[in-house]
Length: 319
Image (tube, rainbow, N blue to C red; front, side, top):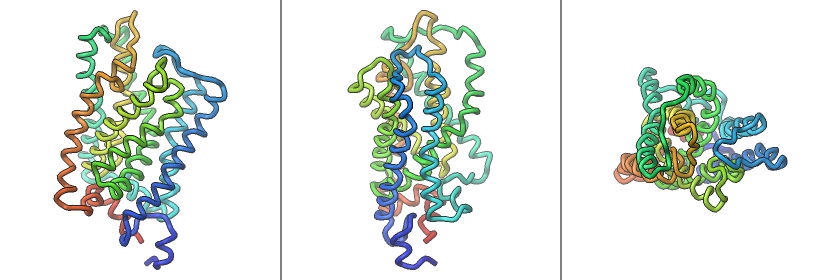
């Protein structure tokens, strides 16, 4: 059993002061994740890269920087967790352990990967009605069939992000602020973490920063809320990974793949990150948050720990 002096100086949640410990760990994690993202994106800034149009494809350097940046949150989370706990406990504390039955987790991951695709399909309807999106049959069926393969190859990247955001950061934000407020704060932090790429035209190419950055943060709050509720409800990071993967690998390419040959949709107005889809995503996020807000009201502060599942409770008791 850890003595009092050790518990005050080591990393990891404490039973006697979980909120104080959560704040301390967030002060370690968030700056480290932000610093890592900026360091990884530095080569792009030094070379003067900027994505000026949606049709502009990323080169090898951009892909390498982006892929490495997505691994940063997991690297920071694993190192901080390992500092406080033995290796054998790290997967459970970061919610990587697969709950039983495993078949249920597989089903949860399947429907989670479809959530943002469904939201995007709804958002494309008003976009088409306003003339911002001109749908057409895909020129090649292979482009659609390649999406699952791309998702499978990219799976480690989304795992890299969500180990950090949902496995490490989210439980601590929930302890500090409560589940609902913690999710909203997490969405802002997640959106601002993308700033090194957003400022280079990553999400909204061709648009000024005073439009792109607020739009990216607003979408991150809504999308992050949905992903976080999926993580809380399933007590596992894996369905959250599937939801994030579905957003980037299925929902994001859909407008480009189904637009007419002479039409390139603007991501600011068409697609899952668009201003048109954002109200729809916010409605979905609000409903999702409502489903967990009752737990905080009924059970009080303890609900913020209980809602994270057995993995976070295990981290709380390992002191």
